[in-house]
Image (cartoon, rainbow over all chains, first blue to last red; front, side):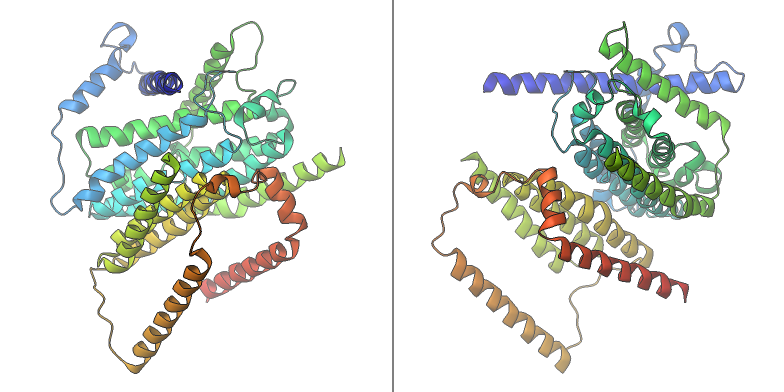
Length: 317
Length: 166
């Protein structure tokens, strides 16, 4: 029993370290790729090809002055980044990296993901409210409306995958895509999932709650040092989580020829991350009413259509 | 043994949280304590082996309902306010009814739970609490209630749209 617990803790620590390393290098990858897209160099001074840049950034954040603005509600001001960070990292408990490289595989893993990731909105909301200034508050309001609106079509798109696989365990979902990936069987569902997850992770066409030319930095405006760092890590961990979920639900997870399972998984995840950066570099930001109309009048009906068609086809054949 | 300790801890968190909801003057504190209370309730569901119920508790109450509570409170920008109700006849009648209801509820619980031993909580649950079994039960035994609930929700949604269009 004790040995089991120790093994489990070691597993958690190893996976935690892998995730945080990936997240750190995701920031470097984003900056280098953006530089490439915009015909400039990007960070390339620290170490070979700028490889030590994330470490330098982390150190810099630790040594910055840690400020709490005067009229902030101190308790919630400190609690907010912690909630954002913990909510995202807890989701990785059920994310399998390969056939046996996961912390736990529960039969209701998809529900767990929905439940825990929905708690991330409290971090943003509390940060916006407790900073006690108008830019943060506006960012908080926008974030809440956006996250609630896009969570519904996201879940509906996922139900299509659940109908096809007949299970809520992520390992089972990946195993059931052995012959054919769900991106082939669920093309509409995949597009809906992609749009919604871009909005949930606050990526560029939908990054309205911290758009810098209207809101300074949205809910993060008053944060500095490592409290800001926690938000930042949380945000990139969320992107990494989104890429893992797209890979697992639609791109066949760790299945693939010749190369080992882990290699396939990370190739697919980082390809998704590259597409995320590509989208950021390509599309302009939408307006807020366009964002809401898109969610309720386009994406949600399409998600229902996808669900009904999938269910009918599954029952008929 | 560990189960009982966890149960009492979760119960204590729930009760303290619920008391805080009605006693604290700051509304944001109240909502956050309600959140804590709901989380502890989900924990008790997990302890009983009802994982699906626990997760739906989190998705629905914490992920949707309480977010809207906080949203409204932030939009209204409520200041601190204590329990300062104007003491009218109406208030006394309402308080009387509430006290009566409380007495009845406590009496019912006392009647049904007195002399019960709190052991083997997880064992008493049927092993049917999987998603599949839940769906089968919902769409066969409880189909009428399920459909009535969805009609109720539809009415509420249409009502909300009409009110906001006015």
